[in-house]
Length: 351
Image (cartoon, rainbow, N blue to C red; front, side, top):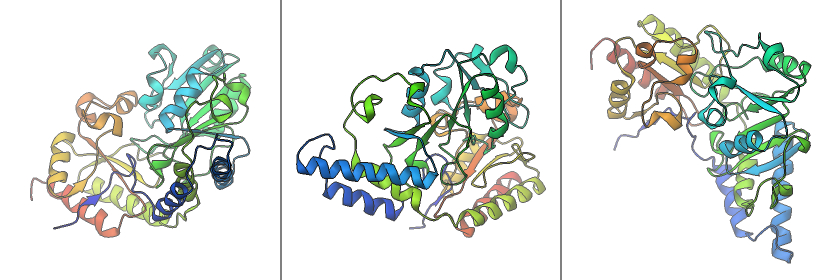
């Protein structure tokens, strides 16, 4: 059977072998880390070792609160914030926008960067501002140093969703809280973290994780998370070359690169094929054994028109013709070439 090509790593990426091995070791030593007996104390030591390693791998000197993933980390940061209000970029993930009314969303430029020019009017002291480091649909990298400076100058605090960027880019130094997801970087599904500079930013609710997240801590997943973060990322240089080549070839073939003029993460590319719907493209690619997506993982199943592209000024018609390609640690040059050949054939109406 012909092997399939997976180019949807922004949705989830395959588990790294080092993470799998770390999880198996963790399960071999499994006990409730909150139990006072010897097995529980051993599990607690292994959990805290994973917490320390994650912080070290990310060069983070604040607190690490384990969660079930980035969505829960964002929920905790927003819903349990001690701040007086919240603002979020209009292109944020649904995990953020479902907690932020439309009236509290910040516009973005055509390239996807958040606009904070009206900061004096809306960035009141104590406001929590939520911004993705890297957009999951377009790969656009936000200028977080400048954003953090504006937010802090107004007396606000910055929450950054680093689901796509962690392990690929340095953490934004000006962030007060950061949401992470292990399965986006080769770790297990079912665990993430909220990094917190000052626990005073959150209301405790009791339970585990210093009282900020209830539920038995899953030490084996934490061990897999740490191992995945520590894994080398030497493949990123190839990803940058491959994505740049895709950009050039697709433009040459009459396509359009989404946000092609602004800095983007090397592993994500979004492309418009004029006059061919994203749904038709996904069906053709799937039939050819190639997995890509349209929009974020949370919306691609329903193939809704992307709120990200709408916020960037794209018409509904043009946005409905955009698909996303995302590269991961097991991607090969031949995979990218096969995708491009299929894209070119589809664009010209050939097979």
